[in-house]
Image (cartoon, rainbow, N blue to C red; front, side, top):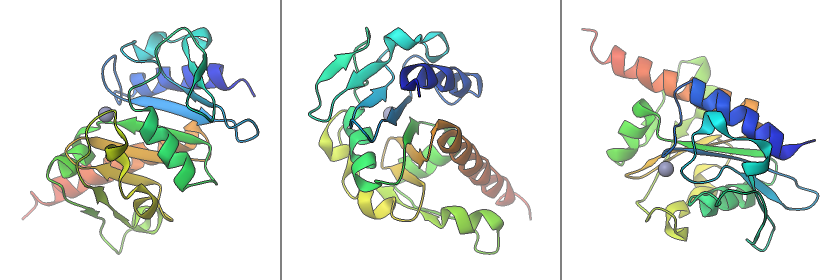
Length: 188
Ligand SMILES: [Zn+2]
């Protein structure tokens, strides 16, 4: 598999869907055989990324490839891969409805009688952690235990999947779910 090319392709898809832009959001994949993580670079328009720009980071945290500077949220991705050895991709963004819960430091308690509740359960909100530090992922093991999505208090959302198609699709479904629940609250 060409991981860098795949990360570039799905970065463009995530931007087209409006989930990410030059300053917000990051995507990665892991090669479990080598432990290398392929992550989007900082401050680049996701729709214009090429395979050569995707940062390759080895298991010691050293950047060994890619012309860009690795995303400042690398630690978040690394922690998600450590928490969930069964996953192959991580997607972080600030999608508005889920991020509204994160900025309120509230879990998104999904309605129990819905199909999506079986997938997402209660989407837990982690405490605030400084952007770009290890504090951002405190509690991620528990929040992602058996669930694909977690909220980052005061910040945004992280979603994991077997690949980027899976992770982006899950994030999209969770975001739509949060939007529907917000609309529902307006129906009397
Ligand atoms: Zn962020």
